[in-house]
Amino acid sequence: MKQLRCCWGTTPEDLLISRRFLKKRVPILSWAPKYTVGLLLQDLLAGFTVGLTEIPQGIAYALVAGLPAQYGLYSGFMACFVYFIFGSCKDLNIGPTAIMSLMVQPYVTAMGAAGAILLCFLSGCIIFVLGLLHLGFIVEFFSYPVTAGFTTAAALNIASSQIKSLFGITGKSNAFLEAWISVFEHIGEIRKWDTLLGFITILFLVVAKVLGKYGTLMFRPDWSRRRNILGVFIFMFSLARNAIAVIVGTVMAYIFYQNGYEPFKMTGNVEAGLPEFKLPPFSTTFNGTEFTFMDMMKQYAMGRTLDATQELITLGLCNIMDSFVQAMPVTGSFTRSAVNNASGVRTTAGGIVTGAMVLLALGFLTSTFQYIPKATLAAVIIVAMYYLCEFGAFLLLWRTKKTDLIPLTVTVLCCLLISLEYGILIGIATNVLFVLYSSARPKLDIERPSGDVYIVRLKTGLHFAAAEYVREMILKRCIVEKSTVSFSVLKEELEIRGQKILFVNFKKSVMDSCTGVNETLHHYFREHYSNIVDVPLGDRSEQYDTLFSLVVKTEETPSKCKQMVQRKLPVLRWLPSYKLSMIWQDALAGFTVSLTLVPQGIAYAIVAGLPPPNTDYTVGLWVASSIFY
Image (cartoon, rainbow, N blue to C red; front, side, top):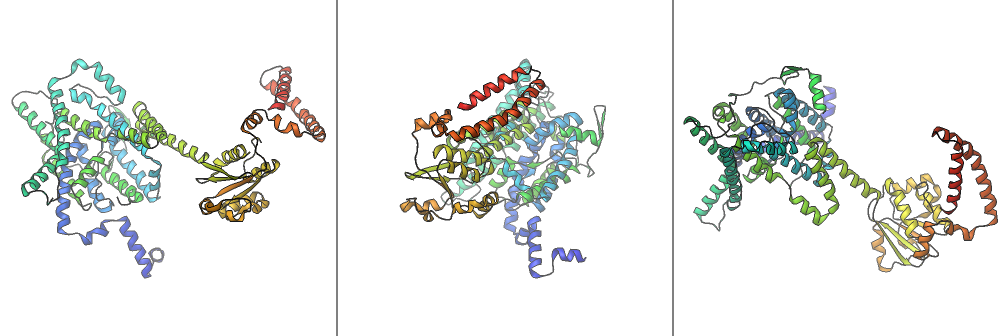
């Protein structure tokens, strides 16, 4: 009790901090005391609208994962209840998604439904721990080109996997290329009625979405009463388009079935009733093969600020609790979150209505789900994936930053041709390479305000990876070969050339690092350009003092042609100033090195499997060429 009292504190300040922390981690405590009947009505409408979208999508995404349709509904209610309490974003809907279903599919193929349920539990535990460790910042490494490429590739992959169902062709296809190859191989098996129903459904969904632009839930004073009512009807009709398509398709299939016709391939039997609340399976038997827990783990081895840490904790809890009701992994849904926002949701209480609708569907409507045509569900998925593709990202990046097209294209191609998991990792790695390159190649602004002074301004921060590049640019453009990288060495190399370097407006931490290497460097740091006598800046002194810079003072600048020749033939730099005393020093140094080089050369030739004379040839050529280069 004493430790607990120390943790939470007893002073008013400690209690206030504890109360804030509790509200941050259990957001319902923030808005529940201020909840009103008006907010309830808006949440009821939004939850009902999202439910009309989630039920058909849940059934469709279960089929994408290779699971019976009821598992999509199992995934649609528990997460809503958990997010109602712990969620921090009123618009976000947690439930089955197309991308998650596609990523789960390989494990369902290998281990059946038990593999998806255990994956839901394990992913929830991992995400929950990431949230407890405050690792929400990890999402910042997923740049726009990578996320856009991943989303686009996943949408194309999912849409391609539904082409066979759209045409009524039997069989499954997981990968992008495999799906299209299979379609062309079985093109003679296309069923005309499934194809007709599928394309009519696609046309209806697209038209209904476009019509939504002409409707609104908000009362507009410039419209008549009749026009406002029509606007609300059009808006709700557009939002419920998925449910309408599925209902109409199901009714048609049922009527034909009752009259002895089966023109469409149907979903088949769906298990009725609510799922049993129990622990997820830690072992299973599928297709005659028994999988222990370790076997299953081996299969897996293959406008306002948002609190990413809180969302990780909540998403982890949603998956953990979902696994107890036999659900597949869930995450935030783009499309349903957009529907939620468009419906005017005010709090996470809208999820309660959505979850209740899913439970009602499980309890009373499962007997009708068996008549849903597969072509209708395929059309729903394909249209949803079309609007999920971010084709505009290519044009946007072409206009703004063309180099970002590389990680975008790499992510798309790798996700399509390899796998989603490896594709996004390769995309992140490619993006990190660009970040590292920009850190290693900072932009330099080199000006020459007078004949013997250069001002070098770094437009970005200076990292250790950029030290060699900055040094080389100063030596090259401020008119010396590579050596150990530091400001101390740069100072000495410039002094050899009769130049002096000054460090202006540097941070104290950088100054301490430099003086730690060489104490004499503190004489070369200046706080402002006004402290430098020979730098004529005029009215621009304030502009320069805003960035840290390097000032290089020089006596003479060779012509560009002479610089290029000296760079290619360094012997021309030092030969005119060569002295007799230098000959004796070089001769002594050369003789000393040869005492080491000759025996080492013989030994290394033997290591390489060559006769010792080959080493003598190599040494001779090296000595001759080193004079010039």
